[in-house]
Length: 187
Image (cartoon, rainbow, N blue to C red; front, top):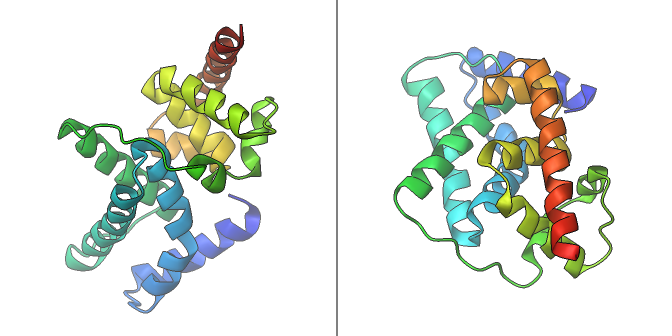
């Protein structure tokens, strides 16, 4: 998150913690695309990702207003909730569904180029996607948070419940492993 987004989150939290119910619409508009994109990259079904994104906001609403709890980091809370829903999704035995035509290319933004990999066409996207699937969950997760969602290591540490140093090491290892898998598919 950039500085402006961090300030916006603090304003949202202030209003939420004072039970301003109108702010939830603004929060939804601010976060929905990020949450949807994160979920879609993991479940690969447009319909399921939409349903799960809605569920993230519903659970957040219930957590704050029905239980009268305060949230310290809204961004981290949303992504942790999404992560939990994805875990539940796969525990229930859902199968991977095939990607729709060019769907990953549409939802993946320019930040993915930070991977130090050349992404020029659909073939490059599919190679990265295949390589990501070969990674351990925590490697895939940290790459998505950092390179696709543009989270700082500090934000990732809150979501993943790890120290910032551990996140940096994990990210380094994940990128190294991703590059190794991409090279092996290109040989």
